Length: 311
Ligand code: AMP
Ligand code: FES
Ligand code: ZN
Image 1 (cartoon, helix red, strand yellow):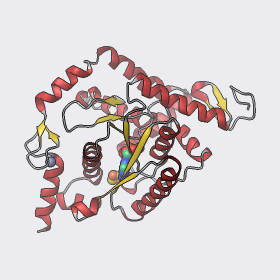
Image 2 (cartoon, helix red, strand yellow):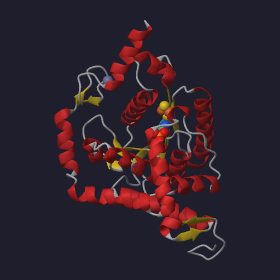
Image 3 (cartoon, protein in one colour):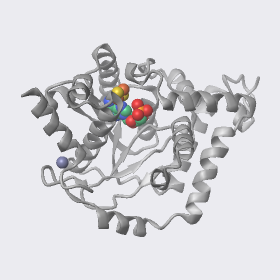
Image 4 (cartoon, protein in one colour):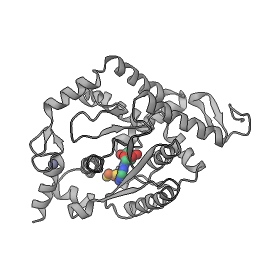
């Protein structure tokens, strides 16, 4: 198998693009897909300060690497969730990568430790407030991503969600007809109200397999294990189904998710009307000032319940 572009020996085949690439041309392909995502979804420019949420996994570390190599001003945030050996290992991978990019690009890492602020790790916290671990974790991560982006005055916050993540999420939202989630499933969400950071997903054009290949080829040392709490989750089931379809018909995930984005862009209310809608329902949390639809935001409610349960 030879590289479609330069005809030297290929290291990876991409059935959905009917192509194969050598390492150099593959890196070019990956960087090009990210550059296209940034441009077509108006994510950010070269002057903007970007905060990348990094988990220690392949996607988010690859995203940080790619943005720096494309010449963007990108720092990162790691949230230590306190999930035993999994958090220890992912923390170590992030720190090692951060040290390398601090030396090569002057980029910096912010760190938030759940245990320090909440007095317990995610698992104990979820038990205290009688909620599933993953939804407790989701609330905390979303809150901290936004908080650090706003407090440290970043222009935009980026996550490493890839094509597989977004296609699986779309499948879940369609299966349960969650229309309000469908409306917000865009790779670029504006900072609709004061206190909310702009949020983007620059990897939505790249698959999980392509990002794993990118990380390996570029010697990015990432944590291979999934979070132990995610075992058997609905998201993993949707991913498995989509992978089966993809093997039979390469390009299925792309047609599904990009097709959805195309249809949304035709019917989507403009960013201004979305912002108007948000402004009508959101106001500052009486406890922490982050925008919320209730009087007290779900993070502050969670912390209050955890505090009461402990005392
Ligand atoms: P996940 O929800 O685990 O699929 O992760 C989706 C994205 O959220 C990742 O690509 C990261 O950008 C971000 N993320 C997940 N976990 C963390 C974490 N502990 N700290 C910082 N960012 C994270
Ligand atoms: Fe949040 Fe696993 S990453 S519970
Ligand atoms: Zn609050």
